[in-house]
Image (cartoon, rainbow, N blue to C red; front, side):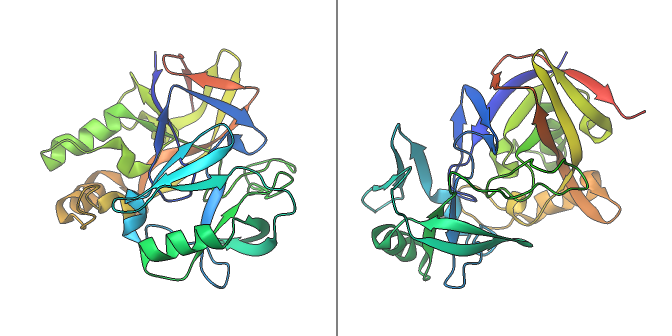
Length: 266
């Protein structure tokens, strides 16, 4: 039976992950996940696609603040909430939504690290960014994630990639929230849902991958052999697919070691 082997949150979209022992869910997905976002001067979202160095920006969530570290820089402290925060309009893919500006100190810190003008913003407490209605009901919200609150991957599928490349690839390349052990290789491609003791993870759509998983997590250089293997093993209908996007129904908490039952497409 599949079991949860690893769990991750990404406090700042496209920056380094934080590995955790449990995920607690609110109306936007895992608490603490992608509640902060870097934007350019026009409010457009910034990711590792344009700024690979973001992979080495390391956030850490404390009780009342986000701490952010980068080699050679003093640690930045950003409040999780501020009264009377200045709102600005930001965009994530085709969605436009209000966000809380985190102030000039944070903007200067990130601008210095990345070498571009940018600002850090927070998800407001009353945000209403709708999940794609082709997959969700009205009133199902998502944070600054690409489109869905949860991404699920499997150790067996990563193992198949690592075996073909000839070295161990880190799961963090693929930026999942939930990693499962005990599944068949690429079984996730046929999932309909995953049954948890408290509810369901409803599988919405496969995750189409961009350039980020092809980069070395240490050097940030693109690795052609990884791209070749992804094309060989994970190209479906012309798209590179790895992992499944999901919505959570009825589940309040996921823990390491929780068992899930695979329900496959009819």
